[in-house]
Image 1 (tube, rainbow, N blue to C red):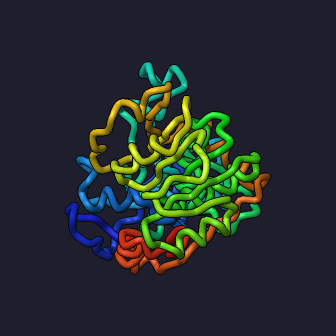
Image 2: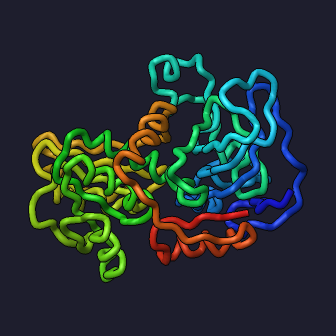
Length: 327
């Protein structure tokens, strides 16, 4: 099968012919129909996340159809359409798994990091960590839901019932979760790179009541802020914009160092917290909610062989929505 393979971090992916993966017990073999490109893929490729499996097939926002099943597979049949997210396997027995926090499992394996992912024509997934895809979404449009949507959803839930919601970094995750926020009756305030008028206009298209530079203060204090951009300097900026008792949620898996800031920004019971990975419950809830909320994804498709071009577009902030690789 054709795949785009990472042989060393900090180097471009290389197109290669790889053996078709074999299914083990409890696994499904998928023919990949689409795989969205996530900022986490950039962090893996650029070496900002430690110790990836090498060589590695990246990609963890996968939509495919079941081509074969291993022994013991009961959830899916050949021909079913399946989505594969970042969380690819957990031990099921540690304290985190047993307390409903499998996203923190010490032995967890992640798709496109410790397990080969979807920048390929075929991929293997554990049936327990795969989801049925709502029929209303075509393959390419569905793929960003598997991480941009899921992590955005978990971040939104961490913000509680905040009505005035700030979103820092208006890309793939933000444009999805802004639609959910508006469906729930919240106001969205979007913060973009200084001078990025196109991103501000994009945010307004998705219901933002205000869109401006991340260096600006919003017209009214925020009840909570979600930070999707991997920029540590946005944490004190978001705290400054957040009202008493508000929450700042850092939604990325990697972020540059947070600079020192005065305690008065944190005082008055403001909270700073992170979001780590996802649980299967997050996936089930969000994929049921997305069609009800009328969530639509904005995508730009690339052939599989142009994965490096898609990654470069994401790195350079040139995408409107999400990039999707189509084998």
